[in-house]
Length: 334
Ligand code: HEC
Ligand code: HEC
Image (cartoon, rainbow, N blue to C red; front, side, top):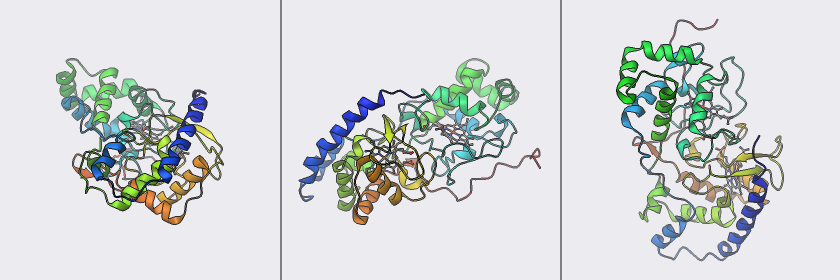
């Protein structure tokens, strides 16, 4: 169940979307000093920080757990099976499969910058990263593990056990395991996108065409919902305000982040839309009641491309078409 309070909020937001429509319509040619534009833009979007101060020893443990298949019910999967942090922190498929081989109910969102979202999950029904890690470890949709087995595994592994003792001053327990994963998640940031460099004053980090795309994104009201450090991730909103997305019913979801969105296809909570131009076209229609021209769509898509950042110095990229296979094990099901 998600809060009904989304409704008054929605009304307020639509109000502000209409309010910013007017000034944007009279936006002059890009003659104004670029720095002033960037300063003004910081009221809408702020740069991804390079660190959230996660403890490096705990981050390292979390990094190990993130790809440790022994934590899962059948020993055949880990967080990284669905959240490919070597590429975009998600998967290329519309929906990954559960431990039983059936599709998970929703598309896998990227774990990059998830620590900056106000709540977790498409519906925003998971209050904290801590709750999310508990679910991911134990629910059958994800790893389907059990706490007694997870703790036995971690304590019996000499390398892990020693790291837990030194980072937490005690033997690995449930709280420490969750905290290590959360520490790693706080490290999964993608700073240094071209847009952020522009916000920080590098006037040449984005092109004039991309700047025009951003102006359009603001001008028509996309940023009434997609704003803040994650260009989303801080509000609940109804999807399908003017009309519904084809084959979907209107529902209230957390506005997703648009950070790295150019490399996180497919789109929407069901992974039903394959390309970014199509997602943008639908958003304008269903959320703003507007039909965009192909040129306008391309312009917004160009801006969205500037939101791709880097993880540990490597640009976030599109993942391979099929999810990376699990490491070889000898207990595969037939
Ligand atoms: C079977 C694929 C799969 C596996 C394995 C998996 N996840 Fe996920 N993850 C998902 C899906 C799907 C969602 C969205 C769930 C929803 O919204 O209902 C999600 C959501 C998340 C989110 C929230 C992101 C956001 O911005 O809302 C985080 C964080 C996360 N997973 C971390 C993890 C961690 C840590 C593990 C391992 C302990 C893990 N996941 C294992 C598929 C997976
Ligand atoms: C009223 C709030 C609102 C407005 C306005 C809005 N969006 Fe969205 N946006 C959402 C919500 C909520 C979703 C999640 C939809 C879903 O998954 O079904 C979303 C999803 C998206 C996605 C897919 C993200 C992903 O990872 O799958 C893109 C891209 C997007 N919006 C771009 C835009 C653009 C461009 C505009 C302006 C034309 C816009 N949005 C206007 C609320 C909004």
